[in-house]
Image 1 (cartoon, rainbow, N blue to C red):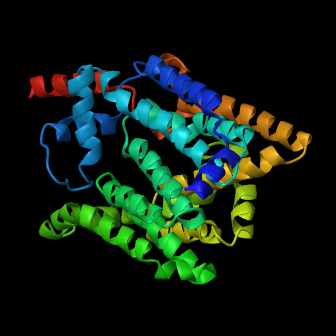
Image 2 (cartoon, helix red, strand yellow):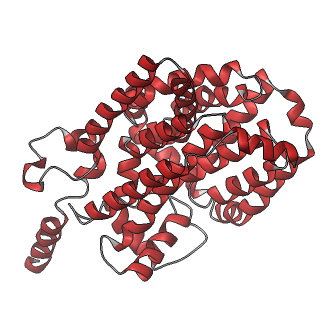
Length: 379
């Protein structure tokens, strides 16, 4: 207990600045939520929420459940369905800051990590619309935070990591990429003694136990998720592989990617957490092999970014200044691409719809419905 208390005092928490950033992000996302219209996935989740179950053909039940909860609690409006995504991103900001703190980051490092996360393109997209990504990112970061605590501080945190990993399977099964990446890292670069920890195996069993109902649904329905993944890979796999590397550099903005590269080096130099550095290329390779989406490794990019913020905050003043300026320019570009700032009438004349599929799939629904109704009436 004395060691834990001493570690806490050594790593002060930048709670004021992180709270301000988190609250501002939540407010901006809610204020802009009525702009444009429902995203197609939101319309789909609204329907699924009326038919609750342990799973669906293409996904687990958590996101549709939260869609229904948002409508029930906050009203059947476009803002009502988007309260939980905005809240999830506010929590994500805190989690990334806590990851930086766990890596011995100063208050400045935590603030930098929080600001860069809050203004990242995919953070803004995931917070503006209700997507599975909206809840997958904070679940990944919570799991990563507990994994760091288990590797750096106290093995009992494996139980917390296992609990989050098990629960994450009810949103997406992609958390398996984190598990496989960490396992490969521990086997390849260690510390292998961790594999003998009873707490690690207890955490793994807990994750499996929590995931059992989800897995039983898949077995009972002949693994629909795997069939859907195979169909998506066959349809768009080649395109996604071609876009994978460029999108890795722009998911949260170019400055985040640069800082994340330094974060990889920082993690690699620390034998205690080197396995998590290896987890990123392993997860990326697996995603490329199966033809998965480029955002599947978003959680690990944020881990690398948090580690890079620790290095940037501890570096010379010119490095800190360059990191801050870079993130500011990235924030501007991310806001223009990810948030509904361009008027709908002008949207088609800009590159935004080509880059941001969520934006282009959130406009034109009233006209589409009217055209369908007109055709139906004429039949």
